[in-house]
Image (cartoon, rainbow, N blue to C red; front, side):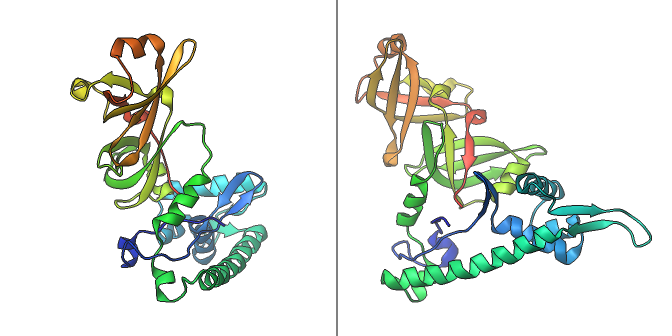
Length: 289
């Protein structure tokens, strides 16, 4: 069970309302087996007997549905979905008894989860209509604390635009200070993550992928899509390399690892204007829940 955010634009509530919300997923060992979308896919397969029909019912592509099924089969260690051989009545897709039990278990967990949220809302004084409509940034922040990744930079924002391509999509995300981060991801990733305009997302960027340019104007003639202007916050020197952080508008901080020689050559000290530059292909996108 995980706290998750829900924007006021989705619910019709004001940005200052506070409620209790959350999401549930199933795990196999340390790997996530699936959440509501994947379980809905399994249920739709059981109802339709067709991958095509099930994918359409849950808003997935045919390939995205099979990718999800393959992942679930592998993580569960036993088949959950099987293709039936064609015959007089034609082929189809069926759920195994293990998958049927999994769906029943999921529905029972969801019922208990809803009861838990109702009790939590009542105990915290957040019960009533507002608790079912709004979810403020406090819970979103708590969910971010649980994110574990080796990427030094975790930039949270809102999806502003998606340019769809045949294979890859270009996703633009607006940071709190108004600057934009652009990522190139596969179409399957866009669908699997549920990326859409207005959705909350996190951009992961390794510090080693970030190039620093002194000044705000000097980075305007570079091919890299991402150019975030700010001011040097801290410089932590090592024997050869240094970690330099930039304070961006809106409170976001981005870090870069550069050589000590580059720090000296660029005159990077606290308060100096600089720009963090990195390629769209260096950005990994993630979502909560």
